[in-house]
Image (cartoon, rainbow, N blue to C red):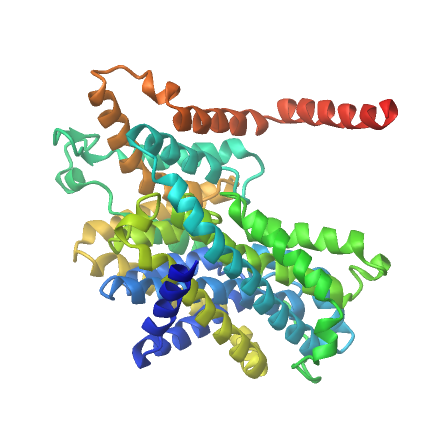
Amino acid sequence: MFDGLVLLGQGIGHFLTPASLFNVVWATLLGLVIGILPGLTATMGVALLVTLTYKMAPDQAILTLMCVYLGAIYGGSRTAILLNIPGTPANAAASLDGHPLAMQGKAGLAMGLATTSSTLGTMVGIFFLAIIAPLLSEAALKFGSYEFFWLALFGVIISGQMSGSDTPLKGYIAGILGLLVAMIGMETLHAHQRFTFGIAALGGGVDLIPAMVGAFGFAEILSTMKRKAVGRVAAVNDRVVPTFREIFQYWRTILRSGIIGTFVGIIPGVGEDVGSWSSYAAAKRASKHPEEFGKGSQEGLIAAETGDNAVVSAAMIPTLTLALPGSAAAAVLIAAMYIHGIRPGPMLMVENPVFLYQVVAMLLLATLANLVFGLSLTKVFIKVLMVPRERLMAVIYVLCVVGSFAITQRMFDVYVMLFFGIVGFILREMKYPMAPLVLGIVLGDLLDLNLRRGLLLNNGDPTPFFTRPISAVICLIIVFTILMSIPAVSKRVRAIFSRSSAESPAKG
């Protein structure tokens, strides 16, 4: 425990430099702008910024990406309150009570409550991250090639459960497509060329950055331009900073929503929107005035914003210790860590134990920056909504092209970005999520390498993949996850449990 506090203190001290604080300021402001603008998601913002942080030191790069991630999730509450249009999917629940408050002339108060509750929710998640992650890392040290294979497969499978598709099957298909893309190029054990079709540029495989920028950036441009422009912005004429009493009277709601958001974040592949809706529903059930929810309830807004922001920091627990994404943006963060030479997963606490506590420090700084900017620059941020989206999308397109080209100075990477952007747009139109596709590309090499390494260790015998205790448990979890994603099976299981729970009181 004492060692952890020392490492946390070192992590905070490491970032208390002018350069780090400057990165916190501009990255948080950029994240807020991305969250405020409808159509731009936290995942897209993180993916685009990976190209701009490529030459930065690894710790500064991840600090910047983390600030953008946290800022975007929080910033999305602005449009949810002012326009009734969630800036990100995580802020959908906040619009139910935030916008009615704005229509009552309390837009400033609503944004102040959202800011404060977001900060407190993130703090709850950070507390559990600092406690749970080291313990989970120690347990994960027993993993070998067999366990890493199943873990990589589980990461792709569980990401198929992410929101954005109307059926998990579409998520699985997107993940498998990502795995197939990862197989392109020279394989690692015997240096054979695979699936290059005679194209020399594919010999080194498909570069992750242009594929990611295309799937999230260029595809987002096409999707945004297809949608209608935003509506009228609600005016902000009241106070923004809430009183201590306005916050403290809902301390039970904040604590409950923070714990719910933390639990949701620990479960890989669920995401911030589930944390927000779960917290909102729990607050409504426990409230003394549930009839006010959906009509401008301050408690409902606080619950929604506490829950989704708690997920952000808690999502780092499976992301760092198991390399399993706690959310769609966390899947992009895993890719960014690999690009910068940081390997999240069971070996993180062996290879880079300080990094875990540095992430805690990053989240603390980003949270404080959100609080300061959120309360002091509210009326300034509203002007961002006045920027014509045609000009904004043109700027983002330039960033997509420059970012893809700048890494290796190859036009081929620009073509890769355009290809994945068009494919990503088509898949989005058919309700396929993009996070499993990118995560499949990231984890494909890990899955392929450990599968063949495990088979080589046993002369082609696959038995250890199923007989080793941890491998068997992960395998069973994967099978259970796939079965529960089948509507007929999940409905049958729920019916059995509801029947047994109904019979238990009767017997008693």
